[in-house]
Length: 190
Image 1 (cartoon, one colour):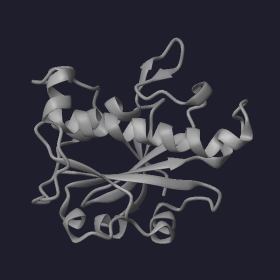
Image 2 (cartoon, rainbow, N blue to C red; image 1 turned 135 degrees about the vertical axis):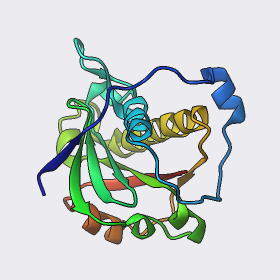
Image 3 (cartoon, rainbow, N blue to C red; image 1 turned 90 degrees about the vertical axis):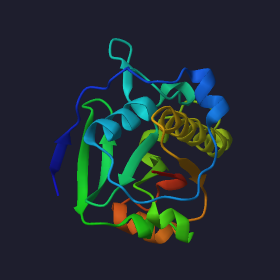
């Protein structure tokens, strides 16, 4: 589609400290589907996967050998998009409301936004470590990123839940993923 949305710079005015967010975080399974502001989306993306140290190329989420092999996608009521951390933009994949396609459980279909965590096979092919460890590292790194999302959602007063129940074929088709990429987790936020 080649349409990008420039996200506003992240804000650092959260009401909760990290320790409070950890204590208050719960898996929430009831949503009203209200739209999140562009600032909320920007902050959720940035604190999940954004570039936090441009000089050294470090991101909010650690990855094995700093390979940056996890791609963050999202679906809200308006579009599906891929977050591009280096530019802090959303690269629109398709316009429309595809949140229900990202979930199997009925409650998740009502969430304001679905985040999808994908191991990028091309990027991960450059991983210098033992190839037998790739799955373990890919899954671990997705879980770390998803945890960042949930903790930041809690700091905003939003509910969230990590989910492994989704139809990988439908999600991959909607996000136009290469066959080699692996969808590991999703998080519903609202």
